[in-house]
Image (cartoon, rainbow, N blue to C red; front, side):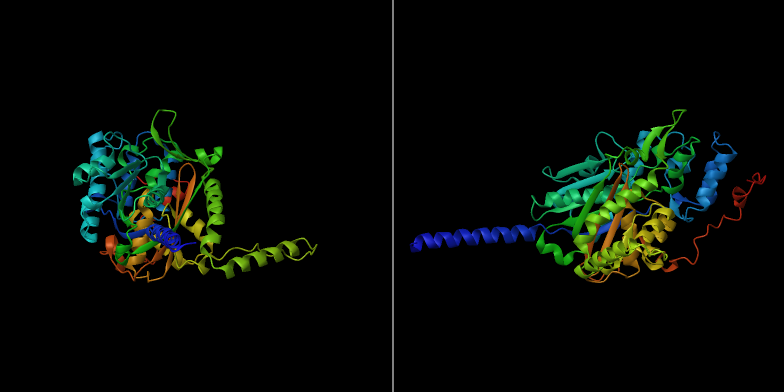
Length: 458
């Protein structure tokens, strides 16, 4: 081989090596910042007001009254969550399109204004925009509202997602992560909120009444990048995103469904198959997740104890069977960011993962302060951790979300630097965790747990 040929081979090899290194480096995905939506105080919904809404529904009988009030009192939701103006004003029967748009625009623009100011980023710098609102679709789309409001560039990549349920924020991040593989040195914004007012159920089907109890107004804006020159400004590095979808299973597919009741009143039905579907999706996601995020020693320990358990179970011994071995996710995860879907969801996931009260505290306190804000709830949970100064450089955070379809999604984050921003929790974080989550109206509504008629003053 002559010198010229050798030089060409070396140059090509160097070019290919440089290409591979740059490609691997630029595929990193970082969360630069995030902002959660906090509506105005005049939109706070107390238990007293929730009771008033229930009592003014003319189609509810005594059994439905009891069911709804019992759900509210035992929901774990506090006195300072936020509701839509249409319902607060007595218009739950019908929300005009203009009012529905106003509800969403306030959440989208309020959080974006704060995010841009906090991150020091101009809207014209954004390359990718993803907006997810599960229960609202219009023309122009909400993503177009954002482009118009902030006069974003004509070449911006815009996506508008609907129908994805409470798992939509991680689906949006997964979409951004895939786009980052093609578009280098980019900035992306993910916006997550939900349309509550137009989807308020005014009927008497018990399976469709629960969303009124749990869901509240909220939203989040997340700024992401794959630009390596900005990673020193980031809060988190996205290490892994995993999505599990059980849509091919008929029971899982129908367990959370928008439909009309027998009288034609539209709402969201939570079927009895929901816990089973959530469990199956959760287990399937964990099976994929564990080998990717846990240390080798934990995987070996689990494999060995499982093998021993299988042998001892079949040895014919009459002694009491030992519990089935489980994976200890705390060997690879420092903080668990659980979807604040309800106390049953939080405690169920916590029990499955072997979590302590400390681990589930952020999700339970988020449910108490803000309610179930749908896809944005995990950012409120993360905000609680940050406001409590729990998040230190190098810590690993695991997010879990669930959504209709049925889906379970997880996101594995690494904390890039010590964090302590008070964010949306700033004004109340010192009052949390609460000593008790018992509803203050438990005494007033104690008759719902007894075989009695409501007091005359109710």
